Amino acid sequence: MDVVAEAVGVIEEQIAILAKAVDELPHRDLVQLLAQLTTVLRSAPALEHQVLARLMDDTEPHQLGDASWKKVLTTALRVSGKEARRRITHAEMLGPRRSMTGQPLAPVWEATADAQARGLLSDEHVEIIARFHHRLPSWVDAETRAAADAHLAQVGSGLGPEELDAAAGRLLVMIDQDGPEPSDHELARKRFVRMGRQQCDGGRAISGYIDSELGAYLEAVLAKEAAPGTNMPPDESVLAKEAAPGANMPPDEDRDTRTAGQRTHDGLKALLRRSLESGELGSHNGLPVTVIVSTTLQELEKRAGVAVTGGGSLMPIPELIRLAAAAQHYLYVFDQHTGQSLYLGRAKRLASTAQRIVLYARDRGCTRPGCTVPGYWCQAHHAVADWKNNGETNIDDLTLACQPDNLMIDNTAWTTGKNTTNHTEWLPPPDLDTGRHRINGYHHPERHLLEDEDTDDEVP
Image (cartoon, rainbow, N blue to C red; front, side, top):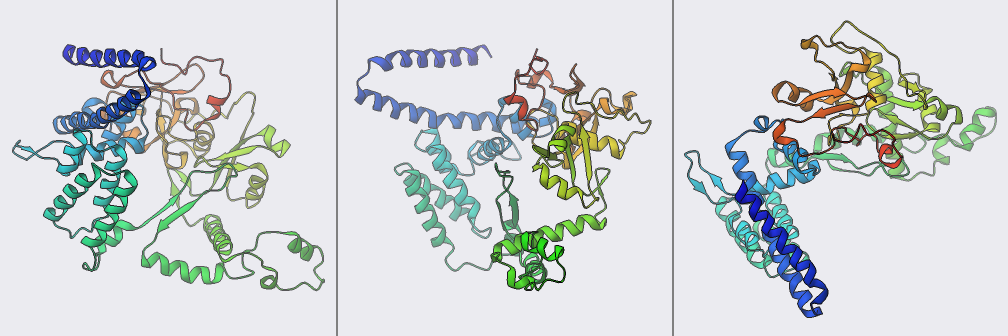
């Protein structure tokens, strides 16, 4: 390790020398310096691929103290889960490999790996080539894939990302002009529905690619539920009709000014609302499948502000009041000033329904630092002492943890506890303790916006 530290120290010294020289270099030399730095920085990921390939080949995540390689990187490097997955995928495709007998093998994308190691391809170039490989149909043979990779690595070394993207798209068409029909596996791989992050106005973007079966269901159901005049939101004309039942009002379909897309939106919302109110969806993590919302008494009295759902979404108080009218959802109210919740001690291992509602309101999601899993997908975890170690199922001893992180506690040296402010701390094993925060603030962004007099959130 001394050799590694010395080499890194040399790099830091050279960067310091270059930083001092910047003020003295003419413009032409500055441009040349940028070009040379870019080449060096582009080649750096090749070393990272070697490091990750060695780790993934020699050991397992749980031996380092975590449940997956993604969690190892998010913990040790403080990167997002998306960035961790990207680095792991690139290491698998661009890093060195070994056969079952231990013989060295070239990277899967050999030509791209070589060009990146020489600093000829940027991260943008590599992402374009990776997207090209992902889009290749499964029937394309290995020889064709290797030839395509070599071609893209060659042309990418002299092109900008936009030109390489256009060339990759054309090459994809040339390979699969009139190829065989996609297999069931190929079609299944393309399906997805994704909800985007909640925006400032509370809305979300939704995108997807659905299979024929789901399309058939939606066609049949929305023919009725998204028809003109169906599932119209309350407006002044509807209120007037209810206030004067004998008035001569035109039929709903004649008063419906919504677009087809808006009618589809309202139809889906009505379907989901009726599905939740039916009570036929069973339970999830010990609670009936329904909407769980928490807010403060002060916001309810003012009819202003926002509430938080068990999935981490924000909901304006007027919408919350309309939602609560259905009387099929759970609403947890706590005092804004004291933050106190009910103390519900239980002699059972499983947390009670009321306790889970309190956990949704207090923790909002998995409490492990860096984890973004919302409350609906989490389990109740004994944070102070596990049940098998005579831990108590009291609300102040419980916390929320997603299933992988909850199970990780049993298989690794991670431990959890509560600090003086009743926040859950996750203490990593020594190999992963790189000095990061031990409390998850992802589900409570307001903590980063308001002054906090407590210092317990900081790493000792």
